[in-house]
Structures are given as structure tokens and as C-alpha cells.
Image (tube, rainbow, N blue to C red; front, top):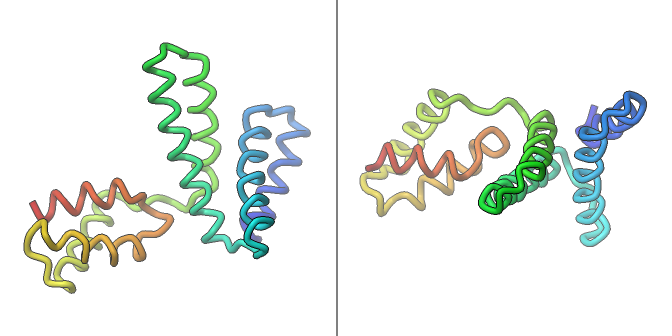
Length: 147
């Protein structure tokens, strides 16, 4: 089953169960998908949908930080609940051990020695860990390994 079909089925279920948080979160994902499909006139693959969900999570995490600074706890909670629903549709995230092992392989393959070589490593790592680790996590681990 495609990710878009799963979202559609889960939306119906959330509406039946009157799960407002899940319903609104799935609608937000569907809106992002539809906007890209209409603007670019193309059908999105599961990988494209995963990238959109990751982008949505990142936007909501930034909003959480701003709401915390403004002491808007009810909005922090709402955004956090949406982040939790979004994460349900991502593939299982790579553990730190898996990420570190994969990065060590890439570092050896591109013969990276210092922080100057981080660009070579990040290019390969972003492709290898697409969907299972976000760029920030990959970057932090790469810096730790090269530093």
C-alpha cells in the first residue's frame, strides 16, 4: 500500500474515531502533497511524501521553539501532538549505532580526513540515509567522527 493510500485510510479512521489531532495532522500532510502535485503537475512517490513529512516536522519543531519563547504552552502542545502524528508515517529511524557505522563506511570510501571533507561525506550520507535520519543528525555525527 502506498503512503498516500495509507494516509487516506487513516484519515477516514481518525474521522470515525473523532480523533481531531490525527485528523488535522493527516489533513496538513495531504495539503502539502496536493500543493506540490498541483503546482508541479506530477504524482509524488512515497520517497517524495516522506521528504514532505520531514519538512513538516522541521517546521513544527521551529514553531515549538518560538511558542516556548512566547510562553504559549497550549500551542506548544498542539504542535508537539502534530509532530508525533507526522512521525508515525516516517520509516523507522536509524539508530545512532547504525548511523555511525554507515558514516564510518562513507568516510573511508571518500577518504575524508578533516572537517574540510565534510561536504563529500554529507553528500553521500544524505542519499544513503534519506528518510531514516535527518540532515541535522547526520551532520552532528559526521562532525563528531571527523573532529
